Image 1: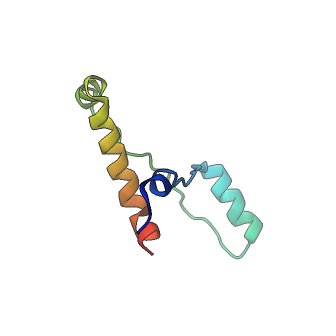
Image 2: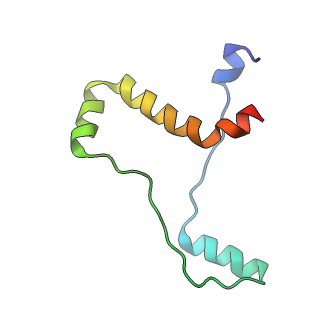
Length: 78
């Protein structure tokens, strides 16, 4: 196990590429032909939920933390 300070310092910066950047990358590599490329956004919560989070920022933090943990848990546990 790691200590709390090390855990809290864990950071994986992310950068969401545009569909054009993804297509350009495949074109550079060659050997692939993109027939269909869809761009999906992250979940957009309701205005009601957003208002709840404005009143309770800690709840928003927990929700975002859960989302990130879901995405990277397997990398951290590996």
